[in-house]
Length: 575
Image 1 (cartoon, helix red, strand yellow):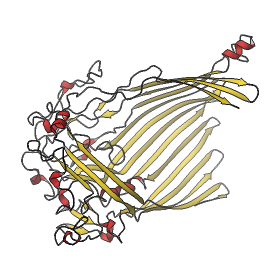
Image 2 (image 1 turned 135 degrees about the horizontal axis):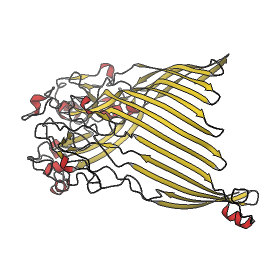
Image 3 (image 1 turned 60 degrees about the horizontal axis):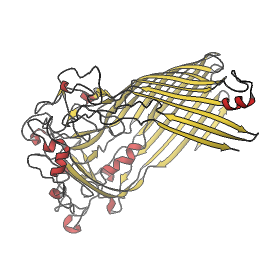
């Protein structure tokens, strides 16, 4: 609901909203994954092994199965806002206001029935929280239930029967102004704080909806390639059919979330100048910035604190907890950019837009919501060492588009004077779009737990390589995108010295062309002809090379990041 009131030089506005963020869902999935490490020589893991060989031998990295039916309840997003647009003078306008939200994250299941027999890890205290006390397995006979006749040690009922505890008020102020410096020049600036009250919370409850004391998510990993315990024909055989939960929740890795996750927010700001060059052309120069705060950071937690030989359990902070994925509100990002554009509205048959952006995006360990990059933390206890450019960072972006009504035909600059000839050569329009863009970053690494810390990563590796030479080639090609001899796998029980996202893929270039022609038919009908070419020059943009040092194709580009030239034509009758 929103209301507004005009009072003198002020336009006041206010409103509120109440929304639920609950969801019902059914999730069914299964997988078996293979890697070179399972068939590699442990003394030379970087250059040996084959994922195909691992597949043929039936020795996977591990397997998973998930069957989850349920829903999220008890959550909502409510908020209100007030603001004012104050026209201080004919030259200056100020906008200011504030928005206050309160987000209650949904909880999996309904407390009044057995769907709330779920739990999640609180790594802050080494505890496992149950939303509701399930029956004992000796009574129920099947999951969800508690093995034995008492709760395992360090397993407790969650406070207020809520796994996620956050109930903060989120305050987002806004301020902006527009100042007309002259009849042709305007200065604008604005800033504010914006909260993500939705995405992360609808996903959060799913992470514990299938965990202990449920058995809807089963997963296992081959920890020792010398004596594999997981085989492809039945990868879950070592952990049973899943009729009953494990004796303790601390030995089943999955993705947990900190019960004290905070709502992510982003302060954003900008400052820009617009200048009118003539009646149809304008130039703008803008600076924009943002700083993502309390972002979701997914690391593999409770690994050994330091690399080294011997049992990992002796170097773990919590001995009874198997290393597992754990998400906290510890991430952040920074973005700065200079944006320029020159725009001409179509006039005298010509219109165009030319823009250039120089920008830089930096984040910590992960890029994107909940770490879609894979959160390749080499050392989970030193995530700041993985501070680098984002996986989607693009330094330079140049775009230009052109609309040109060709000056041929009757009433145009070039006319034959012949009505029939002018009809054929007239009313043609040429359009083009060109995009030039820097390549995107990628990380080099090697599969296997070389540091012997128990770390893992969904991207296939966590260990970085050692840089031992000059990685640049004078003429890189898809057969060898960089100097592969410049890298080496780290020695056993060490970390690699390369940083995250230290390399970049091919820069992107694309030109699209189109030719339009309108054929008038009488006064009310017309036929429009269109001929279009996408990637007109048929220029390939090479994708990222193979980044896993253990892969025989390391350093080779095996795919393109764009599509080949496409041509199409169309006729449209309008009447």
